[in-house]
Length: 173
Image (cartoon, rainbow, N blue to C red; front, side):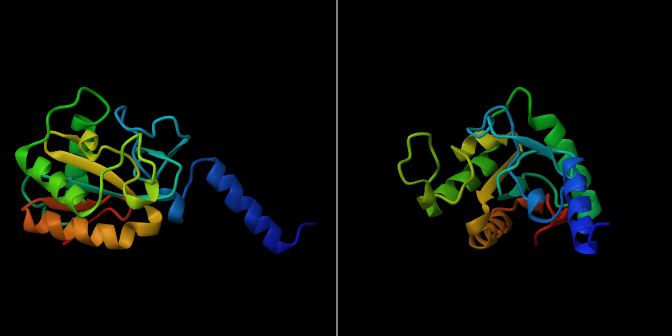
């Protein structure tokens, strides 16, 4: 007979092993073919998109009309994600390019030859590689996500772009 606590832990481990990730494990970086982190281990998050198992926080920003609510935003996001990631990349729209320039003006972009990775909050880089057409889907290290996500959402709003949290499946206003 197992103590109750041991059984609960064992069940949680089994659920995680079957891909039923939750909590912090859901906050991860997408693995499009063009990122520097595509050698990392993959797990399938609740959103159904492939993610890196490293702890990070993702945002999706797109150029287009603002959806009426969270459910509509999720549909738009999934459509854009399916059309603009994983295959041939399109050049980012001018507003997405300007948005990325605003982010890297605030924090340095991440490149393979950076000696001080802690100076940048981004989980991969260069950031422009995470943009295709009207969609920019990017990750930030979890330890810095609150400050960075707040700035990124404000910049998106002032730039006339839509900001969406794929972890919580909600619009950020």
